[in-house]
Length: 114
Image (cartoon, rainbow, N blue to C red; front, side, top):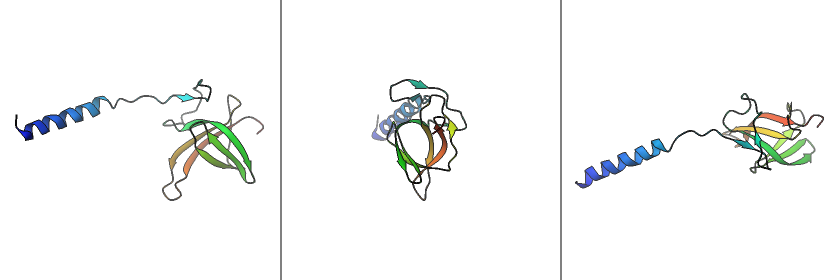
């Protein structure tokens, strides 16, 4: 086999490997304690963009939420919040805005009364 043929075979094998290893796996949402979260609505959590909040810090104009995977976002006092089903904070973040590089907030789940 000449060098060109060997290169074509290698490229074909590489492409085959990338296709076969590209199977889709559903994103599983987990709390910091490892328990599964299954109640996020589809309109908020499209591609694994919802996550539990690990810490909350009050701010003059809202609250800073830090997710279990390290995202920190300022939530304004007037932003719409949905009731949380497990009495904990959760936030759903979409893709980052190109200009500000800030993620898009799709949904906020807050404990009732917060």
